[in-house]
Every structure is written in C-alpha cells, then in structure tokens.
Image (tube, rainbow, N blue to C red; front, side, top):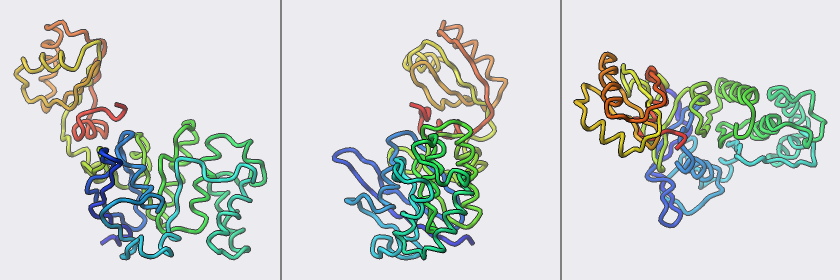
Amino acid sequence: MQQKILEIKNLSKSYGETVALANFSLDLGKGEVLGLLGPNGAGKTTLISILSGTLRGFSGGVAFKGQDLFADRNLRNLIGIVPQEMAFYEELNAMENLMFWGGLYAIPEKELKKRAQELLTVVELGARAREPIKKFSGGMKRRLNIAIGLIHKPELLLLDEPTVGIDVQAKVSILDIIRDVGRQGTAVVFTTHQLAEVEQACSRIAIMDKGTILAQGTLAELIRIVGEKEIVEVSGEFSADAFSAIIRQSDGNGMEILSVADNQAHLAFADSQAIPAMMQHLFGHHLPISDLKIKSPNLEAVFLKMTGRSLRD
C-alpha cells in the first residue's frame, strides 16, 4: 500500500459569498504526481495557498506525514513551493538565488553549493548559472523557479500553474522535470488548466471545479467514466438554446449530451451508427453548423461529462 504523505479533509474557504473550496478532501502518496485539472476559478490556487501557509481563514484539516501541517512550523520546511509568480531576485544570478533561498533552510554552505549546481544541471541552466537573470527567457525563469522550490529536498512539491506564459519546448522540459521529481520519491501537486499537461506528467489526475473534486484516478480510470463511446463535437453559429431545443425533438437513440454552449456542443454516442441520423436531424432543422469532429473518449470528454462545459469556458 502506498504511504500517504498528505491527507486533506473537508477543507473549505470562502471569499465573502464566493466559495473557493467546498469540503475539499484529497490524499497523496509518496512519489505520486497529482495533477489538479480545472478552469480558472476552480479553487486550485486557493488550495496551494492554504497548503503553503500563505492563506488563513479556512475550515477543515490537513495532515502532512501524519501530523497537523499547521501545528508544527518545521513541517513546512519539508514542502517546496513553486508559485505562479516568479519567486527570485532579478538582480541576482541563478546560482546566487539558489544560495540565498537555500540559506533560509540552514543548509551547510558546502552542501548547499553542491545541491545548487546539481539542480541547475537538472533544470538545464548549468551553463547559465552566473548569467544575469534579466537575460533569461520565460522558460528559463520558470525552470529556475522550480529549482528554488527543490533546493531543500522537499518531500512534497506544490506547483501552481508552472507553465504559464512559456513556449511549447519549455513546457516539455518542465513536464519532464516534474515527472523525474516524482520518480525520485517526492510527492507533487501540480495545478493546471491544460489537459495535455496532466496527461503527460501526472500519475493521477483530479478534475476540479467550483471548489471540489468531481472525479479522480489514472488517465485510463477517468476515461472509463465516459465508456466506449464516440464523441462528436459540433461547432457553428448557433445558440445553446436553439441546439438544445432541436436535440430534444430527436429520439436520442443512446446519445448523451456532454455539454451545450453557444457555438459549440459535445455529444456522446454508444452506437456510432446513430451518428449519421443525428447529424441529419440537426441539418434538417437548418442548424448553422460549420464543423463536425468525431473523437475517441479522452480526458476532455471526461471533463465535459463531469462539468457540462469545456475547460476553456
């Protein structure tokens, strides 16, 4: 049985009348890379802020290594944090930043220097260690941000949208780093609103919306929620109401509506032979359709089924 390192129970947080987390519960095992997938406003950053100790005024409990995370400040030294904002000093170079932040954990200087050099190699900045950070690209800065979060060898790493604003090549590099961190035994919580990122980097995925987890499991386990169905994406200049009204006039024939919004809808068919009849029904009502796509069940379909809307909405 996998050793639990993090246990979150009934965590709730509101900002006035806006609920950010609603009885949120989650377990995380040693070396597990958990992707929290959800749209902006789902509560992901609020969760990271609570776990990192920067946000108060919540209810519920968090146990880290079997102890109350908030009762012992020393426990927080075992957690690495990589926020959305860049957490380093631009006037220092990469090595100086790692030495500064590592020094806050009372790591002996000789050991710290060796650790910093190793990490700079890991995040592909070894050759740029002494270069001014102002010359770094966005991707290089993101990789340095991760190195700082890892400098003290944390047992839990929290990453909040670590790939925001960088190019595809830089994202691939960061996802590789995240996977490797998990393989080495560090538990990781990784928040994102990018489907491909959790598919590539995470051993377990939790779909989150409106402050709660709707479904979680491995990618294969989540896809089984949709089942062996064909997913049809319909796009065009139509309103959600018009599309829904026309669908209601059909016999359905084993069809499931995953989501309906203005200009786009997603349908799931248990029998692919029912797709032509449904399309004929839609065209017969002169629905202004511009594009049709047929897809196999995937993580996007799971998200649509659980939330009733696209991740980009």
